[in-house]
Length: 371
Ligand code: AMP
Ligand code: MG
Image 1: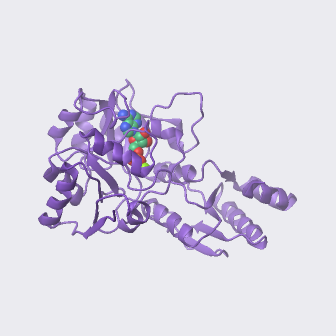
Image 2: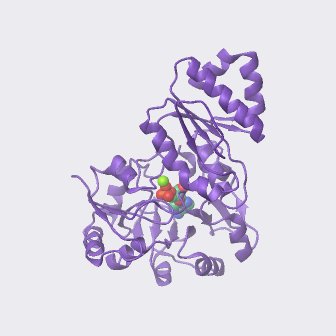
Image 3: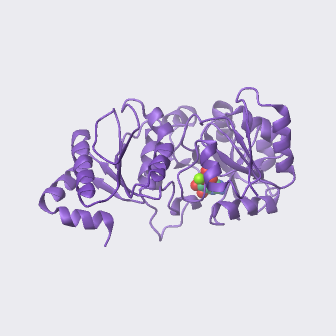
């Protein structure tokens, strides 16, 4: 099967096309559709067989639950058992928008959708095409990102086609997504709300509505340590990773740039094909350089992150050396999280790296390339 791809206008999607896509959802098929964050791979959230297909085609571990997308506030009450004042307030303030709420689930939701948990993740996307699809299907739509599990999330329909084109029924293409990183996942099932995944709505914005929230340590993008049981099953898996090895260099910006440039030089001198992910138009020597834009505009950087990683892979680089982003305010936390996670934990301090490159470049080389 090769997916049919339909171009749709974001503001006024052709109702004919939306009905065709909704028919696919109602018949238990899979439709990839744009949201304001990334492209989602949608299935009827209440149809276990359809949801199983989502897991299968993505290669997603069955213990990692899906987000249920809805198009009206009433739908929240149909998939949630309990909706407390915090959920109410947050939904009213941020929906439609990139905030996912973890709530006690209704027994109507099949086990497979929530991976057997007694909670469900719910959000209302801020994208006309997504909303029209959900409304016309008359079903809540379970949708993870429309990529192969572990790869950078799709911000263009072309990314979906690359990853899943042969395995799904239909793709709605409304051009690039706005935010470029996924929704914020907020767990409301405990006394103290916890951000399990930073995303399009910031900690500060949430706190302005319901008071103090915690940020789970994994949200900082460090790898989940086995032993502790994960609050969000997704935390324990490697995510967003390009095929190339990704090294993130953090520290003081000038040192970061020196270290990135020196590491790229060392690798190229040994015949490695190298990509550099920079910022502010700073000029690097590498086989391919991508720039996430101005340091003062982390929103734009977030939007460009996944597409840049995918472009590096298309260029066949073996190693990507990236300047780190460490700002934790606003969307900064999501950017830091995605970049660190994409590296699978290969985060180096610039001052350490500069010293090591001076004293023992060969050991840096072995460390980076593995033996
Ligand atoms: P994705 O589908 O890639 O956007 O990932 C959805 C994220 O939400 C994953 O990190 C999941 O583990 C998390 N998630 C979904 N449902 C739940 C839930 N009921 N409890 C905790 N985390 C959840
Ligand atoms: Mg995903």
